[in-house]
Image (cartoon, rainbow, N blue to C red; front, side, top):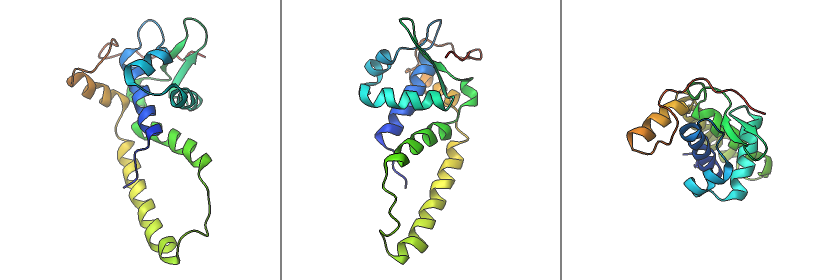
Length: 154
């Protein structure tokens, strides 16, 4: 099965942290780092890509931080995974000479089909669904159970 990379896990954790902890003020990246134990070097890169994708909205300055780019019921796990996957693909070598005809004609197409099926399933899971699971496990933060639509901050 496709692997869950560190960056993908960090991105999911960061979006969930923002969804669970945002209140009157945006969530600071340092707070995410502390709560989720995500190395700052990974977090900053991932956060910027999530902002560019519209999943998060960032605000600079002393009272800055991150909010969701839109309501958590309209952000899917698949979207978050795609952002990181696109980031990782940028740094992956693309050498079609590697592998045999068996790999190119049989194994990779099957693997791609499985990946597409998984992404279809991930597109049915929202950040709100994961927040509800976190609440059920006693892991929710300060955000209200049913949040009002968030306002994007730039």
